[in-house]
Length: 618
Ligand code: SPV
Ligand code: MN
Image (cartoon, rainbow, N blue to C red; front, side, top):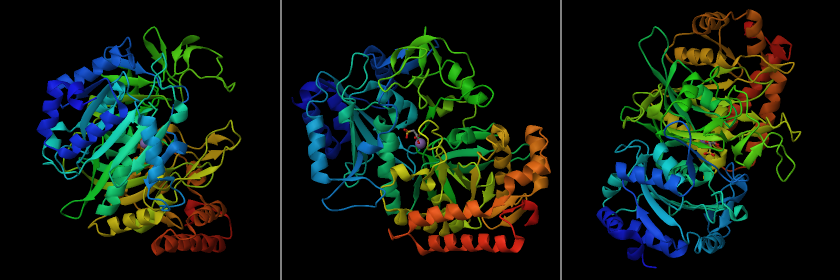
């Protein structure tokens, strides 16, 4: 059916006022493919925001909870995370990007996408919403619009992103915008996606478009998030800036009248959100950052988003008071895949006793319930999430929406291992820091499948989203820093050192590491140079532990945590060398840093005549 018959007068008017033939063309095309019953165009008005909130409740994608403005949404039991295996970059026949990046022949992929899309929105309402990645009207801004048949996707997207309808008008008819087409597909009675076997994500870098079908999980359906991230990474690498899978926070050391901004990249389960939420900090963003050079050659960062789509597991009053309070107070929040009992909610690790039955991502739930594979179903999914606006948090940073971004003092790469890396170190230079980021590893925490301890390599925690060869990505990183007048310091953290199965650090120790890093940015502390980077001095940590946590930090603790474990570090380098050998344009500088680090470690082994060297010996 023709667009004009489905869209209503107001919708036509909103589209016409954009004065953009490309937007019009795209919408007409997908209306023809998807065959919705109705088309609704949304602008930046309160009315549009309210319309979508209400629609998600009316159509059953969300249900109201007991606390005011809290709602719950469920994804299909088998649709609880991004589907790496069915996500492809569309490329002309015979072309590839890298052995690490899944691609599909353009014609073949589009043929399949078109078949799946045919009539996929029958009987449904198509929503069209406009956004701005990065702060509005800034040099960071990238405009994007999404077509979807899911009201909860737009509702959550409205919490997570700045609206951009008005800004689209300023494009003056140009084609410089991203667009995402999404459909949850046919739904089950409980409003979850039915045809999970036809779940697909196709990424088209040329047209700056993503098509995402038969899914609801936020990481796959919220187009501005990880789908647009691929498009932004492609753009950044062409235009000489960085698009990173990083949080941005302001560190406020007590008694000092200053704030120092840090960005941080951590693979899943390496402490990203808890690092962003430490209580001496204010939050700018928790997931994706654009980094640029400003007119003075300074590195500035802006949050691509304005909200948080956060993991709720383990958010409890002891460890994350700010977040726990935010999640239990009345404000607009969409909870995904937690347990609901009488309008109240429960999640793993919240520090409360659980009811024996309720409703969760598996439907009616009772203690001991098993899935088709015979696996016990937990109270809530391990990847259950909440969606809220950052400005609803007590620790929102005052510059969170600043069009100039925030100046970056330091960058943190957070890995996870139980017996290799020290809790915190500073790189020897920008390029050495890039080498550290590109060597990021996280130890698997999946105990059940018997592979605990397996290391997953995840450069800059951005591997899932890379759409350019690793060599190009790393080269751009090095160049970006080289062109800065005063590059941020680069640090690495590891919160997960263990001895005899017990963690060597408490969860809140990361506050001390962060304060030390902040001090380093202002030349506040001396450091000890080791073969792998600069580490803190005992006395500085002892004082910081006392001041920040009122804890005694013994020299014995320090030696255990900050010893340089040479053989284990050399083994890590071997793993990294294996991954990076064999071309893909990995820059010489990277190989040079790898070789130098190896030599420094071997020299230390010889000099000190041992495998594990105490920090006091350097
Ligand atoms: C992540 O996995 O890094 C997330 C959640 O932030 S998702 O949106 O699924 O990517
Ligand atoms: Mn993420």
